[in-house]
Image 1: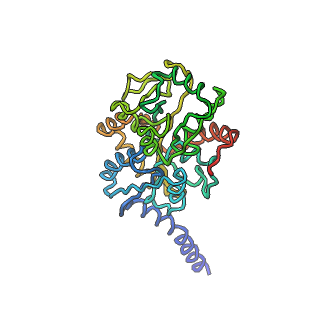
Image 2 (image 1 turned 90 degrees about the vertical axis):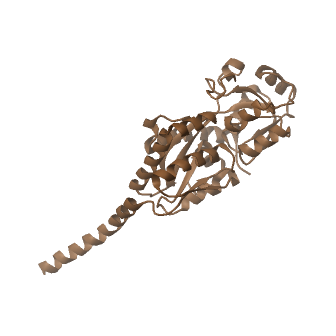
Length: 329
């Protein structure tokens, strides 16, 4: 009887250990096939550019191809919803940002939770946005532009990167502060927005540096200020909003990398190591600087820092979005 009992306990222990051993074996051999990074934005925008720059280096560290899949529909919720529902095996990841993994949780009725259904891998980079206008708009500087908005209430057209995007939320607050209104024209990402700003189909926007600075230098648009407390290294000639006459109006966003909830910690660590290695590369740092992206310090390139920033941003922005009644139609 005692022998049978010992045999049963051995079999039971083996049964419990088998799944854990399987997960460890999977993590030790990961990756064995191509990895897909979901980008909830169209090709050509800043998030897509960041993803492709990182993928070029990470595929060397991971020794596997990395596929970038773009889907900017519904503010990126389709793309990142797919990641949330994917197998937690490290082969489907999300490169998202402030809008996709913070603001969307208050703007959209989602089938997933922006924080609970993902495993954070690392913070990547952040950048500040700009106040820009079409090239034919009369104002020459930010003070004149503010005066123009006041003289044209209800008629000015501002392009948005999307409903509930950082530029939308910030602009709603700006309207409240200034006590005037203008019309919003939402787009599916910054690339199509910039196309219409260059073409003069909209009057102004709060775009990201990588799509707007080249157009400014080509003389196609005007940039009045950077919505940040300090100037951009990539364009030091552009004044800050504090210097130009709109103190404290700061608009920025950050990028991070996530995996589906339940992804083994060993796999998260493997991906994180490849990402940290990429962000330390001198060539990548130079390319990020050229598009106005500021890489987070290495001590913040980890899951804990990403999770902490995400929750802090949720606590900051969700009450503002809810109070303003910003919802995706």
